[in-house]
Length: 225
Image (cartoon, rainbow, N blue to C red; front, side, top):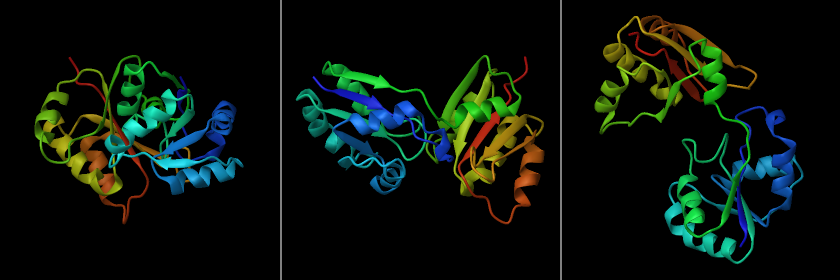
């Protein structure tokens, strides 16, 4: 049997790539990439040349069998996403589950992910928290938000820049304008920032911006007892 490595990649700053991650990418037989162009740039930066195959949410069901066959035949592979840890709001769950079902060893390297820096930066309790990733865009969104409104643990959400204001408005409506939140963007990059304040204050602040760029992490204080 071969082996599948889950390899986190930097969420922005290439200096966050670990030595071990580089060594694993140099040693495997092939790399599975969410976007071969993005991952190709990363590999070239570290002088790594390996066969790459696209593995993303639009083709992961179709490519799964051929990948498992290669691993079962003794090859080794590294799964990388565009940024962060695969399977955390990115493709990865299906292939890991299939490897486990087929007795193929899986090893996940520790590394970059946006949710932990955003949580720590927020100043909210971090001993217990609830990671929700991206909210449903339409169907089930209202139901999910109603459930989360009474969550007492610190809540972590991912959001895209163009949907940030809508999500903040939804949170204000259902969580209350006084619920405290922390919004982080461009984590580990040159223009990294974290804005802290109530739901109302967050909306006021982000409405002033002519444009919002970068991936967003919203951290919400849990509901007080």
